[in-house]
Every structure is written in C-alpha cells, then in structure tokens.
Length: 418
Image (cartoon, rainbow, N blue to C red):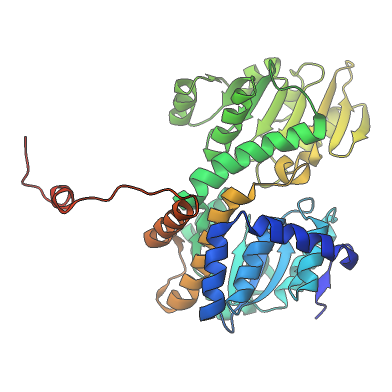
C-alpha cells in the first residue's frame, strides 16, 4: 500500500507549524488526546477518515493516532483539502490520500486507496465512504465495528439506509449532538460561509439582499452573520415552522421564485438538490452571485446554468461569470461546492474543537460497545455530549450553577404543588 497520495511532501513543515498553532485553540481535543496517549484505548483499531483535510481535522487524526489507532485519511470533497496539512500528516505517518483540485475519478481512487486499510471504524462526512463500502467493499463490513457521521447530509443518507434495512454496520450521528449541531453548524458554518464569499469576491455585504435557502442550524448561522454585516436577509424554506421562526427572528420569508427577483447574493444550505435552478436564474438580476454551503454541489443546478449561458469566463479562482442571452451576468462561486471550505478555511478551530471531541469520544464508545450495537443509527450518548460541554466550559474558565439537594428532589418528584 502506498502511504500517501498528496500534492507535495515538501509542504510538510509549514503544515506542521499550522497544526501546532491550531491545536492550541482546540483545548478539549487536546485534553482527550493527552488521555488517549496514556490509556491507548484504540490499540489495534484501523480507522478510515473520509473528512475535509483541514488543519482542524489533522488534530483529530493525531488524537486518534495517540490513542493507538492506525488511520487512513481521504478527502470528503475535491476542493476542501489543504495541501500543506495533507503533506504534514503524511510525514507524520498518517496514510493520507488527498490533494486539492482532485478530478472526480481521482477523488474516488483516493477513497479506494484509503479503504485498503480494511477499517474497524469509519469516520464519514457526507456518506461517500459508507456508500463506497456498501457498494463495492461489502466484504469489509464483517470487520467494521461501527461508524460516525459528521454532517447533516450524511445522517439523512444513513437514516434512509436504515429505514430500508440496508445499513451494514452501526452508526453514531455525531452531527446531531448538541455540542456539534448547535455550535459547529450555526457559528462555524455561519462565520466560515461569509468568510468564503468575502474571500472569493470582496463584496460589501452591507445593503445587499442576501437570500439564504434553508433555515436549519447552518442557515440560521449564515443569516445571523449576514444580518450582522448589514445585509437584508431573505429566507427560503419549505418547512412552515422554520419559515415562521425565520420571520420571528426578523427576516423575510418567501418562495425562491420571489426571492430570485430581489437577491444580490444567494447561499444554499439545505442538503437537497436543485434548490436554485433555471426557472430561478431566469428571474435574477444582473450581477447576482450564487454560492452553496451544503455538503454536495447539487443545491445549485449548474447544468441549467451551463445550458442557459452563452458565454463563460473565469474571473478569478473560485469565481466564474456566466453571461445570459439577454446580457445579464450571474456569478458562481467555487463550482457550487462548499464555499466555506473551497474559498476559505472552513470552520474555526474553537468550534471544531467540540465537533472533533465528539468524534474522538464516539470512536472509543464504538470500540468498547460494538458488540451490543445493532445495525442502526444511534444518537451521541448524552454523557459524551455533556462531557464535551463541560470540558469546553472548563477550558474557557466558565463555571455553571449546581442544583441543591432540595432542587434535585423537587425536579424528580410529583407531589409538590402551589
């Protein structure tokens, strides 16, 4: 087996410096790594990690290695890999198969190379490794104890498999942990998406109409940050409760066919396909910018955009101009892939600290409990979620109130009244 397939091993030293610097901003994961180094709970465990190869991911992978695991890392998106980080990990003995700008063929070749590790545990972000194993490597499933899924899109796919009894091994929906979903998805996606748009375009957001498609935790975060920078935010939602929440939060809510007429910047965050399509592009004003922060590049229908355009011009990296028959110009960012990772650095380390702490603790949980787990999708155990929150507060120097014995009794009894 080749130990790595990366852009350039000579980038390793710069990558190591960044890993160390970011590690200092991930105190919870650092505490877990120190514990794992002492206890070696993952000795003999082979882990495939199909994740975004970023500096934050590097610290997770090194924590797993410290615990005794053998890790093979491959990218969860062709444009999200940081090549200096991939080189650094390869030089540190992590089997790394990722480089920025992979073709579709290269992306899946790297995934196949990583799967040669014959995993005991799967870490997935979006479900590509899981799909590959079920479709082409079924023989590996008998040795897989379980997996962890990092993102909403992947969890949706897992539940669909489980519903049809087609899930080959147990999974923990790490994405749904409160210390992941409420913080990483809202504050991480919110900040990093706006960062990606500004990196790519340097536009002024103040005074712009920003259309956010989807008002889950990611959409909430994007809307919050856009509003904070002075934008007028419009939310497009199919769920009436979420649309109502958006209105109560101070945003306008309307269908995409109406939002398309007034938007300056469109950001999709739904996990669904063809959220913005030809019928909407026909209504958009000259200069409208299209970006996606959902996991897969299907939320903006780029086929429609290609077919409608009479000319196409790459303005700069991550910005492509499409000229319509009537002379209007629409701009697509990062090929419709996750703009926060393709045009920026992804989530800040302070928030990934919690998400990857959840991952690291759930890997151990799987190893220690796999014999009693069925082929189902499980929530993150409550004690893991709460431990991560406690450790994060401790690292921030924040104390919380404790219940008195009287209060505990009151909350657990039925016979107290007015």
